[in-house]
Length: 125
Image 1 (cartoon, one colour):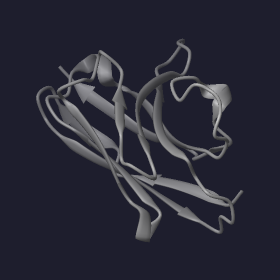
Image 2 (cartoon, rainbow, N blue to C red; image 1 turned 180 degrees about the vertical axis):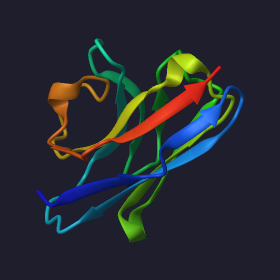
Image 3 (cartoon, rainbow, N blue to C red; image 1 turned 120 degrees about the vertical axis):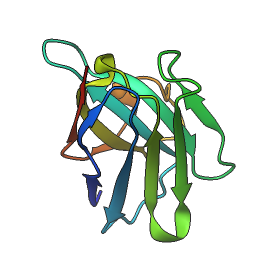
């Protein structure tokens, strides 16, 4: 399945911005959808955003719509998450994921086949 490696997390003040990157290496299967999820302490992992590899259609959780932007560079096998107007509620470990199957909801974790190790995002108030 290859490896997914996230980077770009860190500590930022409320209202600030961060850009996360997720680079894939060693993959031999086609990724249909790239996704970003996050998990805060004591909470379940939740969907943040997704983008299709083919047409570039994007999908967002209501909580981040208008503030976050997902994009991808197929030639580099890299997906990005631009996060603006960050809030303390955005504090979490952010994971990128690759959905190799054509079926399954892109908003649900079981639909994804490969996961990165996660990168911490902390937003201070």
